Length: 409
View 1 (tube, rainbow, N blue to C red):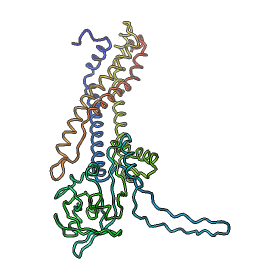
View 2 (cartoon, helix red, strand yellow):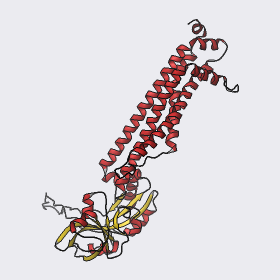
View 3 (cartoon, rainbow, N blue to C red):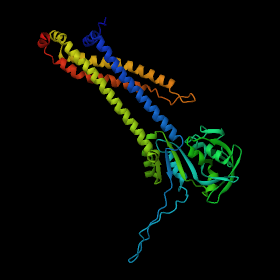
């Protein structure tokens, strides 16, 4: 029994749904499957993108500020001067950012900027006995830099606390040179800097090439080796929203006049792949929603045909066309709501099952799937609105039925 305090339209809508129980169950099941697919695919894509971005961007800054490149300009003279047609590009010397301390302070005050870390980086030669390898020396202050690239999390052995005579090296480089923790490594550069550093940690950056050439030292140590007293070769920046990195980089360039490259620009192919995944997910959600809408509409169209006599009787008893319209709109909304609730539950179970079964060889989760309540609420509202939209045409047809024709039919 339905409560008597319910409005008339609700009572009729629920009774119509009860009389067609089998149709109601099937359409609620179809909506539930559609909502489950939307919830699961959206969470799966968000987790996959988050995993990709985390793996890529935890080893680099979101924005990098670099000194301007050197260019060659032709000599221009007066009348009769012959200008050379061929220009040879100059060698790009290692140089420091001008007034980098002031630039760093200015950037740190911009909205969305989280961390600014100075870095002095350049090529060097690591020598151990008769073996040598070309390496990249990256000098930094651990406190801000580790908030950009957490070397402690990438540490395989040793520790990440750096003093002036300490160095962190990649695991592949340690293997190539036959060195281990506590060993001395002689590092020399083309600027004439040379020193012996103690290996205090081995890091795995997740890339063989990076592990073969990457080394990390204190900022002042790198400045001394590279011939950059008090200078830095770049400012590394992280932002709160990684997708806003290019917009913030353009603002930094406009405000400071320093070239700022975001990960979106330097990793254009990766960003394009991420965008393509988002587009594909949107297309999937659209077509799933469309199939749900057609399913609800088809059931209600059949219901209008089956209930035409009842609708005619109700119209003859004095109910208005607006009430008939609301009856069928309520049916669409209730079908969408019931299917959405069941779909949210199925989606949650599918996400929990995925996290339990999808594992790496070491038993850890393949990647984390977000279970954002906003996603479930959005799917619920989408299904209800789809149900209402799909019910509009059948409801309009029912409201326009002529009572006499409907009763005779």
